[in-house]
Image 1 (cartoon, rainbow, N blue to C red):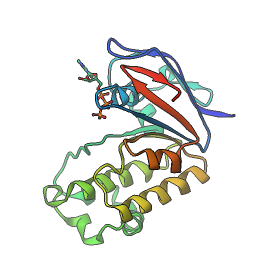
Image 2: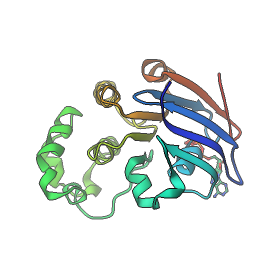
Image 3: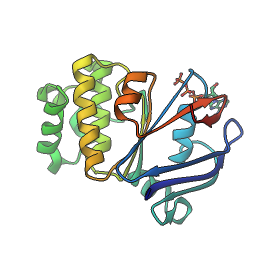
Length: 201
Ligand SMILES: Nc1ncnc2c1ncn2[C@@H]1O[C@H](COP(=O)(O)OP(=O)(O)OP(=O)(O)O)[C@@H](O)[C@H]1O
């Protein structure tokens, strides 16, 4: 298996050490009880939480690039989307509006929501727009933390179709989910987080 992402001896005060190899165009799924360390692990890979150890993207080590450059390629999508200005569209480059509209329609989002204040959006709408924000630059690795947690069944189908399409064009996904059916549908590799350690189930 050709790896896109390799995690070596990654640890923090609270979790690890972790070893993981994620194949190009594949999805590794992590399940596990609440508080077991799943989000922490994704955030450590994205260098958003304190950590030690190595993470490699193809042949480049994380330490060889700046944190913003790393996160553009290894992009974390939180279970609780974060926003920094008033309206949805303000979070996207002006020249990408039509692509955002296309993705919004695909994910079952009303296009007029692009001009709506963030505060007016439902949790599931915010979650899908935050996924659009992450996939638009087409990063080689997506770290997705419960991306369909608040969504209805039809929206889950739409999101999973988009993720499969990205994988088919070479994106690799590390997915945290509480849904065992979703884990089965999307996962090529399966892991279970227990007390800050990654186990094969
Ligand atoms: N900076 C920190 N200081 C102390 N404890 C922390 C810190 N960061 C994370 N933890 C603890 O590590 C544990 C793992 O948290 P994490 O958010 O990774 O859980 P999770 O598996 O993603 O849970 P959920 O399924 O509920 O989202 C939690 O008990 C959390 O309180």
